[in-house]
Length: 403
Ligand SMILES: *Cc1c(COP(=O)(O)O)cnc(C)c1O
Image (cartoon, rainbow, N blue to C red; front, side, top):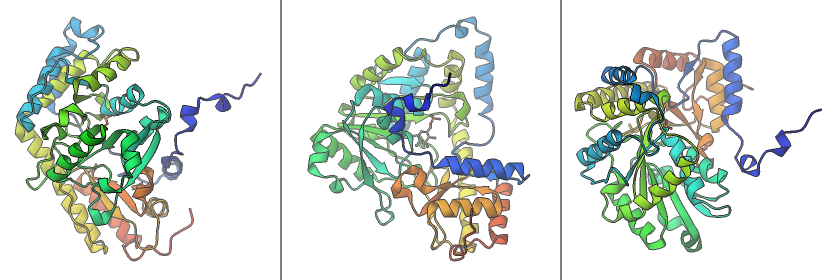
């Protein structure tokens, strides 16, 4: 007996747009089979170890039998306390660790479940295009109608709230956004945060800000927390992750802070879904948030060095790039005459370098690719050499190969 289970999947799965990475994955697998040495700058997956004190905190936490049982649903009190202290230290924002901070199994989990906790089928959710996929895929799973806000290079990829029609603003339930931005690397001035808070209070829209690149900022730039803005806490939550700054992507730990009612809704849903984060990992995360500033400076220097090195190489290949003030990415216009998919596939086929086509982040990302600076300078140099050898330049991409 064969039952067609694919056709019986819930509509919430078929609502998800096709996975642009699928073709890329297929070509990556084929290239590997052919023995090609891939340089994968496609994922936002930091290279290397978590900090030594974090590993040591985890190892010693393993020796405590208490940590081997179910963790508390709402996260350990000491991790929540360290989140509140970190916020006070970094942004001067006061948080009640009991009601205004919730540890998460990585921020993607929380960003997605928040939509399940607040979105009914047919509700309108505002999401910039391009954006991090969880910002629209979560709401889509919940049955949202997504109203994309098209971002433009000429506006430095900053949301233009005046392009949101009045009737859409009135019925919108949530606005997801993210500065410093993945994928565009854009940073938003404090005035933007003030404007979006005014706008959201007026229309009673929930603001969901993803501040996962809080510390990956350079050249003296300090990213703004939405919660620094007076009045923001009435309408907002802000998400953070330990994945990027602390090389802990595989550990699965992040957190959300902000309005206690909004957080309570997410907590109620999660109480029915999961048992929270392994206490050992919460101990480690707590240690990460308490690391001395020198650690953060080292990380910043590492990514800034890679950024400058790669931009220098691209400049010699004809690109004209302004260095971004934050994130671990470069957002690079495709070679003249090519779209995102063609360019990413051409680069992969000709050089074995994997970059992410910008349209994977929504239509607004068309015409760009995202390059993750997740390899050391030697490997990045090798990637640049291969581009040069393959004749891939900003103006020289015309004769694309068929893939
Ligand atoms: C990497 C990233 C995350 C992190 O997700 P985790 O689930 O915490 O690993 C969240 N948002 C954005 C925009 C990211 O780039």
